[in-house]
Image 1: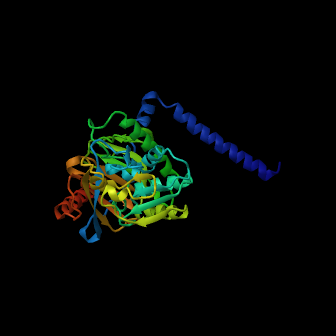
Image 2: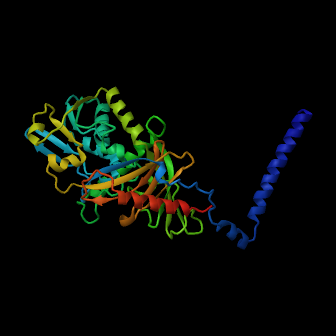
Image 3: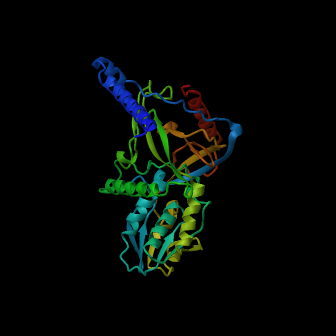
Length: 378
């Protein structure tokens, strides 16, 4: 061993000894001192506030969530010689549940692989369903009167959390098992899409004023923390849950899905069906109904109602790397950062069919988020 090697070895040994000494000194703390260390509140790096200003609004958008109090519909229906498999009514969980309910719906097909399939709708549910069918080697044609970016999916906030999907006490037997299964399937598939091509990424979010209920199961939200008023970066909220989940960028994601559909050999026909008689003329023996709110008229599902959501989108802020939700129904507010802008919501108006922005709601949204930004701890 050279003199230099001996010095290096000695230095490494001293470093290791020093580290061991620090570890042993920590372990030898008196019990009361060790308890103080372990009970210290979590300290945050200050969160940057959103610049909430009317001058920074780049657009307002309104979307109608297709909501059924009894939950999404995955039933089968006969139409003459055709089999219609429904996949609609996801409420506020359309994008979140898309891969899961698509998988459950296509499992109901009892036909050879060569049997052609029609998919109604080119929103996130229709495209997800069509892509899974194409990956099975089936011939698929989408029939739709609207394409991205002109779908309800394109105006969603698109935070992964299947919320506002059903009303407790009105769901049928076995629905929760189906809901949880769809949530698990979908969240796992979204993990494989994280990256720039699909516009999917992980984000830390805070639920303020009410506990997060972990739709789909607690394991789907890693690194959960529950904070009190001393450890929270937000002021004025007794309850503060921190979770990690996935953020989806609809302008990027919907385009990527449409590209995948075409690359897999899918065909698309722009067409609107006014009644079931027109639908019965299709050549395909199986029809996957992914029309969302369109099923209210086409299939006369009067239990299906709109839940209106209004968003204000601000100029992007690269330094905003977190989201938050105040989940009370009467005063719903949420903020999520995306590449195309800061998403400020929101509203949840059952039975409202209007697609026009409401000035009073805009004022409430802006003032609410301005108060939250001002209340961030420095």
